Length: 483
Image (tube, rainbow, N blue to C red; front, side, top):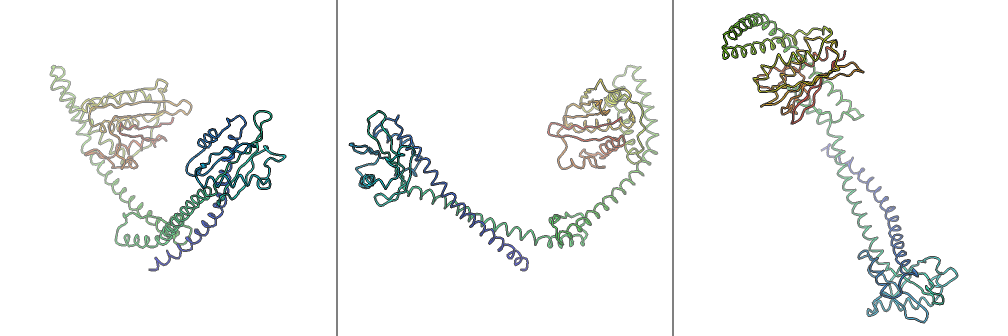
């Protein structure tokens, strides 16, 4: 109940203040909009009268009606009319004289024209200088009256008095619609202020509840439960408490993750030492024996046996590489730089992996930069391992037949060599893109998740970087290796 009361105390003043501001702003805007509406109507009708009274325009009621019709913009122009008075002639008008109200309107205007004081400037010294305007009551209704005196086109022609009468009711209707819209927007604004006030109140009262809930989860052993620091940006005691609590939770999580990682790395180190001791020497013996058998089969011309031995050799090499990966990750050593021909290293690595690539029905293509110097300082063995991991990762990312492209580039100004390994697979799933270089993260069935972690480790040992771009048409890894 106290939460609801606090929210109400926050919302009501907020809505009242916003409502008062809206009302004051609405009053000011309404006055300005009403003035602008009246000025706009007067400008538009002044233009119409200026066109109609131009001496070059044809004379007659038909011309007046055509001008009036072309100037009508909608219902707001209904009731507007033009009248032309000329000495010794009947008035020309767009009014319907068969209509009693229009006839009465013309009669009142004709009477008013006889009194020079009613329309200042009409046939005076400054007659024809500009169009005058005034508000006048005709036939019981208020009208905006625009008028001007014009001479005839030919010498000796009598003067003509042009009048355009526009109902004040039309202006009032436009202003009423504008007022309705302003009131509607004001009501919506107040409603929005009420909703916003409730949201602000809820936002203020929510952190304490969230902190209590999070503390309860942690107390029950839920350290891995998500903790939302919604009040992290607050500058009050609750915000400070939330920040401190969040930092404590993150620190506990990091400690837990580091402990788990350390345990896994320790286990990996023991496993790597055991595997190296138990498998490396037998693998070497097996490779030598199979190599001898393959040579004998080749001398005998037994193609089937030779190909079978080559497959066995490829699997032995793959097992040896896995052992080497475990040793590299568990017992990293600094990079031993020496002048290295990176282009030759790429060619040799592709040749080394050719059997595995052929078995997977993946073609390898190289695009080597001729300008890359043959003595770039690198740890050849480590860079070769980095490249092997990236190529095998690309090969495994291709579900069916595809292409792995290895490129080298050279930035002569910065003396930086670059490696690019691109595949035509389906890309890296979005849910693991942020942790793709973490150890033991893999999307391949049976994968150990060390290949990309080792690649990143080797790049950093060379003071370089590794990054990737991925999409539905494939993934490209970029490695920078400074000299």
